[in-house]
Image 1 (cartoon, each protein chain N blue to C red):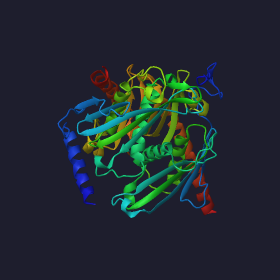
Image 2 (spheres, each protein chain N blue to C red; image 1 turned 180 degrees about the vertical axis):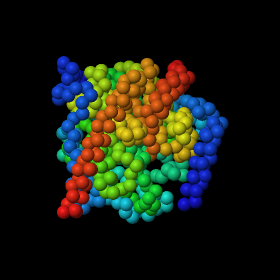
Image 3 (cartoon, rainbow over the protein chains, first blue to last red; image 1 turned 120 degrees about the vertical axis):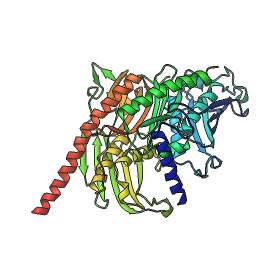
Image 4 (cartoon, chains in turn blue, yellow; image 1 turned 135 degrees about the horizontal axis):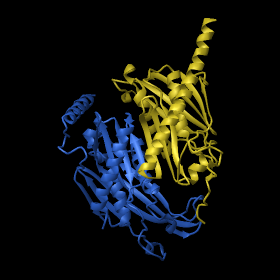
Length: 259
Length: 244
């Protein structure tokens, strides 16, 4: 119970600072923490990336294997996205089946990739109606200092971009690069006391009542969005969040995804 | 064989004859369940959902109690027979996520501080589905909460907009959802234009998104009036009975 008091004090601290135009770590309202993306860190995986945003650390691994297609798309590959909030990443995470937060994290990342048709699924058919490539995107959260969605989404697209198809392993022929046609980037902002902050850290995330993730593509179109948290947002606030989303996504894409 | 293409707009009309900015018919009934503290049956076209509210009541397990306010629990559930291919009973990842965002859609209007340490349970059952079930569920739940006498700042109204054949349209049905290019469910406090749920998948330009949000806002105002009327009708009726 004592933690609740600490949380309240922390919330007040975050609020008060923002009122005077400052953030807990001294950043500008639209400024991201330092980002790093390290690719191919897990050689057992077909694609992988270790992403850090400030002190948030996420490892994403992509595995591919042949499997059965869905009945309504017999000639398309299948994407499966999963997220694990590993207990070592936070005192608030517990082992066990995925809770709503990990389900949401996985589904939002999945939505961005699916909505933008990033993976050319029609090229992942091995034998129509029988065998297609299954693309498993597994998000492993290692350290939670807030804004897991942006880190996970960046890890996912970075892993996909350098993933290869394990054709030889399964005795198949064909191209061994995974066909990718877009680069969706997630940008999350929170609203605190009428101010919009990009890339919230854990303190800011707990202090905010509303959070919006905006996923946008190379051409500036939107391919996914998710509001979470138990607050409301005004239309103008959402417009600002979308604008920041598209702008920041462009910067992140140029810096970390263009090879 | 690719997923077959279907022309969803013919001569300026949608396949079910609606215009671009037209809602499906809505039917609201308040107080349809005997045992629940508040309940609501909501139809949106072929969607049929029931919402029930229990509480405020004691929170179990107790360590999930909040010393300062009530905890809202929301369960969105689809009946196995509500969809074409039988849905396996029990929660799946989709319903876990929908339950979360729906709870957060209603959370901002509920005066939770009035009932510390309690739970308010909101149960939404989808009996028949035709795309838009989460929005129908939120509309029903909002009315059921009011019917249960839970103190609220306002009602929440919800609708989805989508993109079919390149056009931004209101309230997709299942065919439009399956063959369309995008879907965007929105919930809001219609009177103050406060958005409490916003999701999107598919592909929208920034301009299409902004237009869609405006379209959703105006439809939410229509739905709000229907919710309000349904509540008023139900309770002016029972007040009349009391006097007689």
